Length: 462
Image 1: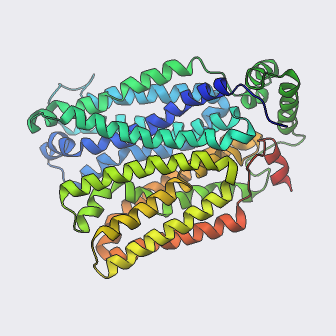
Image 2: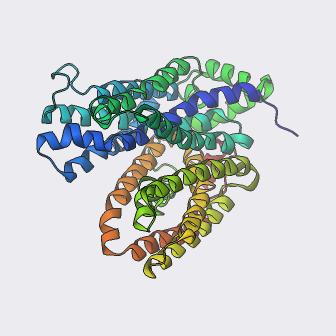
Image 3: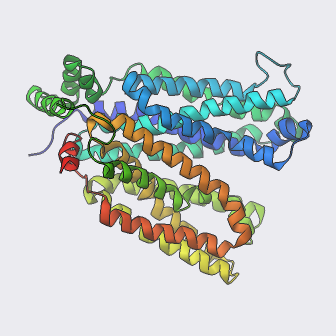
């Protein structure tokens, strides 16, 4: 029998939640247009060098790890909805603070190590918002969505992340276009950070109008409110009652529940999904794309154009994942993506060893990124949002997301020294990780297509 639910209502709620994903992408990418200005205004005047610049640019990642760690506590204590609101507030504060780090304590326009410290602090605050949103947005969507369209709806969040990155590239370009370099270094970079306040404010306002998830409401003994939300989603009292009954069965435990109540394997799988998503090297391709192309012989303008091409590929193949995840399943997409990534990275490795530079390099980078965007990009978030049983979901998602940001930092920071040692071996390592990720999914990851969140309890108790 065909599932019936209020698709318009569910989609509206999902789109609000995915604004958190858009802010995730926006906040992490906004720094790209400000690096030279930060070096000019905050680093050089204080007698600091490239190490300080690198630490400043990557400081948000520290916040991302913190946000991932505390997401479990906040989502369980405050609820999924209020946690999204906290993320919106953190994004808003970071936007103003990063734009005006002198605010409250220092003279505007005068650089000092104190101003640099405040800038880093505000970037960390924004990073906490990113870490929190990266955990809670897919969790919220997963707990609202019906089983047969959950994969597609959670994948919207990945699309929003990529779209947020594209939006901020155009915003930064629009702010800087036609302006003298002196103005950009003095004022333009501030507008780039400040622009984050607009989507942050809209997100915070809209979150006020979405419901709390029925799973969380049932966990805190608000069954009537949980039923009301389920009734709006299902538009059928019997179906809403049935789902509520199943939710209650999974949260009423005779014994005290801890993070390993369903075995260590489910936690291990969640962590390894996150680690492999980063160890295959995607953020190297995203963060260092222009540098990669320049190192491989492309001129500056050509490398930027190739980066734009990659951005379009990212969007197109994320849509492919959205359209297929609930039809083909999670495992087939992940394994197919791993094979495609391995082909791309091993080919790039071979080209690097043989010092062959040309259109083939771009082709294989596109094969690699397209394979990632149709698989490990969105599907990892889908699985993290759904594989954990109701009682431990908040804590378990927090562990998986914190592991993901830690792996992100490790891979991003080790890329430059690895490239100095050997470009061919560096890309070969990412290819090897792609092969191992396929084996891991094949052997250990269960298929969750079409299963309700309540079925995860039975799955892991077996």
